[in-house]
Image (tube, rainbow, N blue to C red; front, side, top):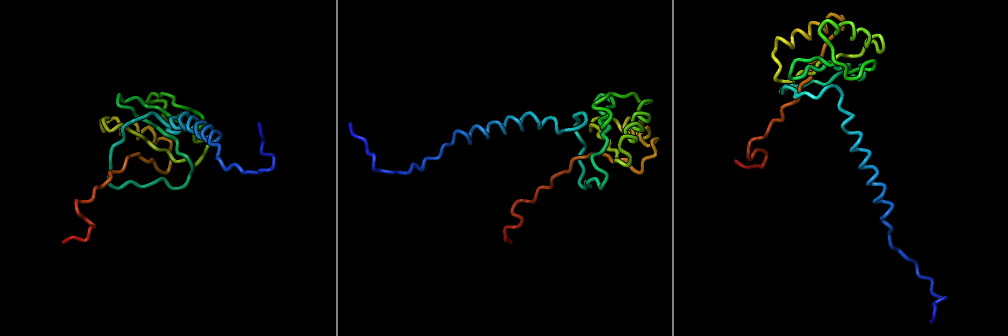
Amino acid sequence: MSMDVGSKSVRSDINVTPLVDVVLVLLIIFMVITPLLQRGKPVTLPEAKHVSTLGKGGDPILVSVTKDGRVWLDGDAHTKQELKDEQIEAELNIELQVKPGVPIMVKVDRDVEYKRVRQVVLEVSKTHVMGVSLAASKIEEKSPAGAGKGGK
């Protein structure tokens, strides 16, 4: 048996095992956290061509109205709490005491009748906030075929 004592070769192999471990841990973290990022009750929002973004004021207090007409509040003092119509004003005032000046956003499922939307917005407006935002998803406009390709 002979050994090459005098040769000093450098190994340039990359060990990818730690890299794969870190990527898998990050993947698991993102998979766990992503569902928690959506605030309020999940609803199918109505679509609109022109959607504006919220101005200043931080994260809004969310009032969600689900398909069955139930009202849910999600803010700092409450987390996904179901409310009756007569509780909306009082609970929103508690939220506004915790974080004054925070905007209120109403998320309503697109299958809810307008009468129900109006009832909820009237209850929210009793808090005398400067404005109530209604959530909507933007319609993505599709360009016509062949547009922008320099053709006649």
